[in-house]
Amino acid sequence: MPVQGAKSGGTVTVLQSADFSHLDPARVYSTDAGTASLLITRSLTKTKFIGNRGVLVGDLATDTGTASDGGKTWTFTLKSGLKFDDGTEVTAEHVKYGIERSYDKSKAGGPNYVQTALSGADYANAYPGPAAGQSLPDSVLEAKGRTVVFHLKEAHADFPFSVSWPSTAPVQQSKDGKDYDRSPQSTGPYKITHHDDTSMVMERNQYWDASTDPLRHNYPDSWKFEFGVEAQQASQRIVAQSGSDKNALSFTNQIHSSFVPQSQTDSELQARTISGMTPYVRYFNINTSRVTDLEVRKALLTAFPRQQVRQVYGGATYGEFGSTILSPSTIGFQSYNLFPDVPTNGDAAGAKRILEKAGKTGTKIVYAYTQDDNGEKGALLIADALQKAGFEVVKKPIDRTSYLDAIIKKDNGFDLYNAGWAADSPTGAGTIPALFDSSNADGSYNYSKLNDPAVDAEIKRVGQLADLNEQAAAWAALDKKIMEQVPVIPFVNTRSTILTGSNIGGAFIAPTSSALSPLNIYIKSGS
Image (tube, rainbow, N blue to C red; front, side, top):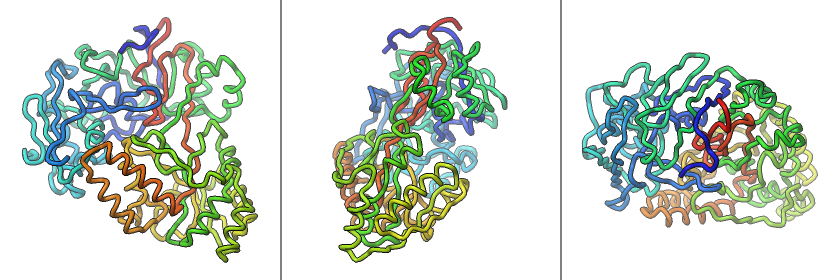
């Protein structure tokens, strides 16, 4: 569907702090690279945005797939008229080859959902990839004409989301090679015509057929990417918008904090400030292997000064307070608040009563945080609030570069720490297993170190449900069940705020990635 008011022509300038780590569809994983990849790479399915929610649709495929064998077999049919940027017709065999090459250990770095579903966790040793002269057997992955059939090891109701990643993009074996990561072949509305260490240019792909594409447009003539432009410099250039910077934007650079006050008072800047909710949820995780008493965890949640800490990170522009584990962008999300009487600025007196009743006054809490300006300011507020509630607080600052490595350790020595999560797919399967399955507790994202056999069993049961709607409802119910154990203090569902040049139209924040989406962008006037 055409974007209202959109015009064709002109060049968009994208200001990037660095070149993309990868553009090879087998290796695209970062938000920056994934956003740029939307312009050149199509996958079997993709998320289409309707308002603030994403809806999965067929991209290369005619629909989101057909399940059989209780959800263990998935069949996709390619649309007719699909072509590469050299005019070659896209076939199912090209899709199969693209997936096969993602098994190659030299292509590491991309998502592995499809490979794991087909061949298990040790997929790289199960099949070395096509460079070794082998092909996946038809019993695993079939491709003929326009039909691709996946034979999974276990049922996966959310498998259509797995094939929305660029790793299911078709690849011509004859065009594969060492430079593919810098300039992959295109099936999207643009193709790469120049790429070096300082810049990249995309121009229209004449073989892209808009009638086959439910997501993308090709309004600009071209996209010019400038590398080496740091966030503050990018904001400065876009605010000043001298010359071609009227056509400038950044995919992921938030408006720099030094320009936030100006953007809130200057009506002209307000008009070109794009803001939207993201899938990222921030929590303050409670280490349940150390803080084993549920009443102590409830007291931590009750005393926590969310309002004051959010202000440190930018106030309402940083995000909206949450009360759940799952993001509101999750399919089947159910809003709830198990602690509706706890104010956002905390209730030290109420927390103190909980500790006194439990006989836990004076409980020591080791609070770990990043050793930077925001981390230090937040730590002072948190320590003060917890101490007023009757806790003994020990602050542990950690260098930013090693913070994540420190908190994911099984025996990290901390009781409370800040962490966040954004699911790779907008389903409960993208969040709950990663954060709360006890088998992930050592060196993984089970930040709260939850070890509950009942939760583990339910995660396994729900993950094998064949019906996506039934599964979504079950994940929502499990969200609430886990929260009853208070393994986290829900903090905020984050907001993304990005500035564009005044000549940019069609900009919006992708609610499933937090980036400025390129899908509807156009130049309002001139070049």
